[in-house]
Length: 197
Image 1 (cartoon, rainbow, N blue to C red):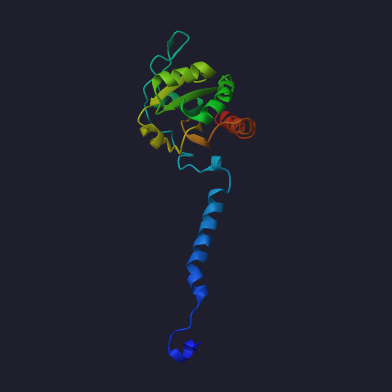
Image 2 (image 1 turned 90 degrees about the horizontal axis):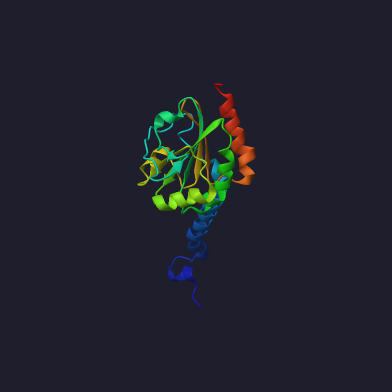
């Protein structure tokens, strides 16, 4: 066996070859923990404290309440009322889970519930509301997703609380759940109702 120093070849350092792999594993671990850290419903929104988007949306065709068509979204509808805006779709599984809770919230006549139906067919959206009950006094149709972009939607469902002055006060990413409806959402609604009253 010959001595590498005597032959003029550089000495082998196998640990140097493991450095890139160790670096990759370290970065992957950091990204993994970063993705799973915290509550995804607390993703900050750049719209908090700003006026609700001035997005007019057409009514959901054929959606009737008390014998008349449920209106679409007119941005002026937010003025003077505390509003809860929920972005939903019939194809969204968590939307089905939160629907009974929204119906419960809809019984609170101190606030106005507004639905934005996201990239859905009119028939499926009407069936969805027929199945659970329609908590919304206003339902706007966002057929192409443009309004969702203006509202800064990450994915459905998402819920906003709008103050009487038309300002976005709170955003809940993800579904309304039995856990967050009382501890988070109703508390934020009550804050909005007390402000400016």
